[in-house]
Amino acid sequence: MIPAFVLRNIAAVNFYLYAQDFPISGRGNAVFLGGNGSGKSVLLDAIQIVMTGMNRRYLDLNSRVSEGGRSTRTVREACLGLLDDGEGYQRDACLTYIALGFEAVDGSRRCTAGVCLEAKASLNEENVLGLFILEGEILGFADFIHPKPKGFEEKAWPTFLDEQRRKGREVKTFQRQKNQAFLRELYAIINANARGTQLDPDRARAALRQALSFDIAQITSVTDFVKRFLLDVPIEIETFQARYNTWRDMQKTIERVEAEIRTVETIRAACERVMEDQFNTRMWNYGAQRAEYDRYGAFIAKQRQEIAEMQEKLDSTRSYQQTLVEGIEQIRRRLDAIKDQIDGTPAFEQIKKAQAERNTQDAIRKAGAIEAKPIFDALNALREATNSPAFPTGLAKITDFASRLTSDLIGIHDAAWPKSPKQITALVSAVPQLSDVRAVLDERHQNAASTKASLTKEFDEGDRILKKLRSGGTYMSNDTQDFLADMAKMRVPAQSLSEVADIAPAFAEWRAIIESILGDWADALIIEPRFMDQACRHFDSHYKATRAKLIQSENVLAQDQSLRSGTLAEAVVTDNSYARAFLNVRLGRSFARVPPMISARAISPHQPTASTPMAAASSIASSSRFRA
Image (cartoon, rainbow, N blue to C red; front, side, top):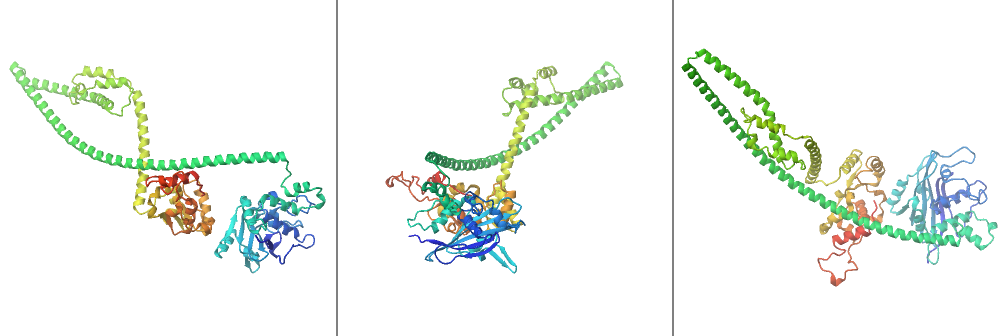
């Protein structure tokens, strides 16, 4: 049988003008006695705030003020201490604690349930910092303040929680939107129902509100009593049936959405594995291609050196050829001079004639060489371009024209080029328009430049990662490294999850699966709770939309800090309690069992079961949910 609980204490800090304990002793009913305006309703308001989970829908502060109607008093005014004499607020800003202490009638069990509020005169509404439940103790006024020579100072919400945990007390906290969970937890402790059934939070809060504004003169029948004081709002059978059908449809929709979410999680995990495999494949291909590129680069450099040597020999041969041509020309002039002497031409006339002819030939040769060189270079370049594999297809006119530019037709450029000026003139006049090929080549050049820049960036990133790994470091994103550097400048101790945790040797084959599940959280940063406010403000301001991750260590519960056997969390070893709690939550999914569809005699050592990485990964991806 569940023992009955009674209210033993009301602790109020900065609630109207109250800052004290209100102990309640003895057994039976409790009555608040006092004159008008002495604060009896304030105590009922404090009880309402805690027992409704600070849900405004069920709050009816000072409900008897207007004879059963809802008053205009607000929780914010209660926290700031609104004075009835019209002089404003007692406080401009404050933290308010309200705690109810309960004890079993036989003295066997105790608990405290309360709420922490923050109110400011500059804001229109109060802020609920948290709801809390502490089993085994009844907290008093002194547990929520720091005494001072002249008065007191209320404890900050994180300070209060840390102090209770240092005393070995387990404080369960709840956010405002989780007020139903708060009330269920409280009712599970203090509910004195002999049958062991639990109260429904909404019905209990509605009954409390109706009880505080109860007036027997308003009751005309049992039905009217049930509708007005037991039901949250009046309801008809048709309305109830419609709501029930709506609820049933919503349940089906929720089940369908959850199934779709599991499917999406499975697809996401598979995509991450595929992307990782593709990245590894591309990295290895890049390494192989880079090695091949370096080998061909060395070979090309050697070929260029040999070509340079051959070019020097060719230039030497051409120089010697020019010397021979000049020697032949001198011999011809001598023969002409001898012939003129035989014919009787005077010697000075012969010399003058020979000099004029030589000057003319030199001038013609130089002019021809200057004019012909650009034409030779253009034709030769066009022939080489069309022979390249990179030359665009679909340009039949240019390709056909280039096929006629053979080595025999163009020849080798020298002082006597071209051998046949008319033939070269015909070729030049037949050159097609090159604007189309120029546009295509410009586009390809831009694409090649873009690809080169992308490959260079990937190579630099890969090189940076390799250097980091070779120096004993861990692979983490630039955002995470920048955030670690900022924490070091701020003198906030921080460590990444990959630095304080590692895969156990016995679970080495699970590494890829665990890293796939963790994703970016493998390098999440761990910061002690006393530095979390400072770190969170900096994180929200500069790194909220980046790949950097931050583990909320102040939300870690004591039961999460011990190793969960039989789960993926067992595959990771760590001495850090916050890392262990995070891994228990993130990887806390059982895998050491055989799927029902596989019989014991049908399992072979090579068949995947739930204890193998692939089966476990499929099970986790399809049915597990994780929280950040």
